Length: 100
Image 1 (cartoon, rainbow, N blue to C red):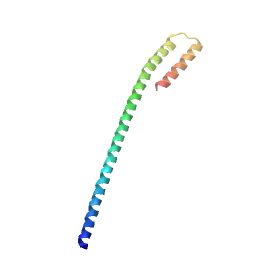
Image 2: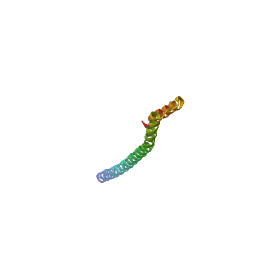
Image 3: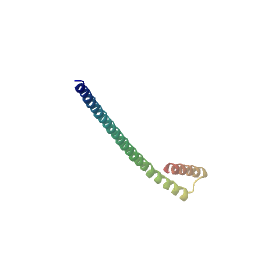
Image 4: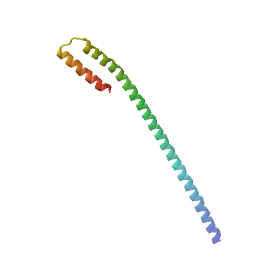
């Protein structure tokens, strides 16, 4: 009788231990899946930010390049007063700085 009771307790412990192990493993797999999804979402957001800033950068550089070239032409081909010349040089330097 004691032997059967002992075997029953051992079987119950093994079953409960197995159930606990399976539950913890499923919990860990779910946690890993959530982490993978979060990492993928972060990666997608980073890619979107990169594309956005690349586009914005291009949108600023194109008109700045046109402005710089026109200012350069005016400086080289026009007889300017010293004050206007100085202001145009300043505008050109600031535009070039923004264009970097």
